[in-house]
Amino acid sequence: MPRRLSAVLSPAEALPPVATALVVDVIRATTTAAFLLAAGARELVLTAEVAQARAEARRRGALLAGERGGLPPEGFDLGNSPREADPERVRGRAVVMTTTNGTRAALRAAGAAQRVGLAALVNAGAAVRWAAAREGDLVLVAAGREGRAALDDAYVLGALVAGFRVLEPGVRLDDGARLAQALFLAHPEPRPLLAASAAAEALAAVGLAADVEACARIDALALVPELAAREGAALRFRPVYPKGV
Image (cartoon, rainbow, N blue to C red; front, side, top):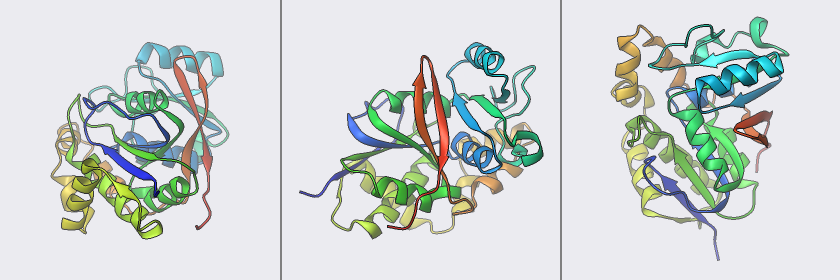
């Protein structure tokens, strides 16, 4: 029987126990995560809380990255912006990251799936190839926004569904995956849709509207942040470069 591809559109939905999960917080955590690793960060460590992030950064001698209310907490080295992923600053360094929605979604996925990857538009093709190369059922997890479904994340889930169906036309979709795919197919150009999202409006309010353009670039990167280890309340990710399947 063909495997099943599910999509969880809201943080309020329970995650099915599956072999593989792809987590999406396109504006901006999973986009930024991919750019940090592409810029040469040695590893990326995700935590849920600011205090946890500070402790992990001290323990590892790592850079601190992330946001609350869209802006970096006091004392953080970097925000949650893909435009801050400067190789001269992050190459060879560990980076500890905490965000309002995305890092929590990754931790939730790690509790349900054996394997976890981070996906966004910038690495959508690589994420699809990464997931297709794994055995078993799959779930796409939208981080959402403050406990609710988010237009931008649902759209990217749809892009992943559409890409996966090219590789596995017989894959079985649940209703969430069908809804997300319909949204994506109705809007072939991502920039206007992402710009219309509540996440984009919130960034514009704090002067970071340019981040939305960076998040809307399709297949700019060929890597997937893959969960390498669960370390207490933290998740350690490494970059992997999927081959064509």
